[in-house]
Amino acid sequence: MGIELAKQLINSSIETDLARGLVEEAQAFGVLTSTEDFDEGVAAFIEKRKPKYKGK
Image 1: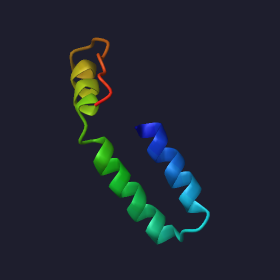
Image 2: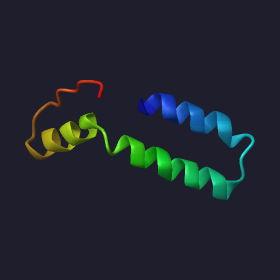
Image 3: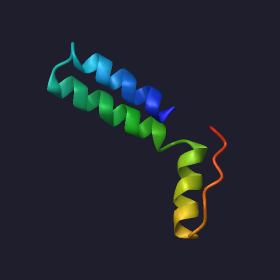
Image 4: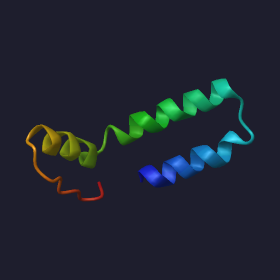
């Protein structure tokens, strides 16, 4: 999901001004930080273990 959003942002940046691009980037960040995988990654980092991502 993260790579897909990054590609979309890169492609849309050609036709978007900086202000709109920053808004879109903030929205994508919000989407990515609300996933189960984000929570798992943070928990694994804190617990000093490898994360077990589910793609969710």
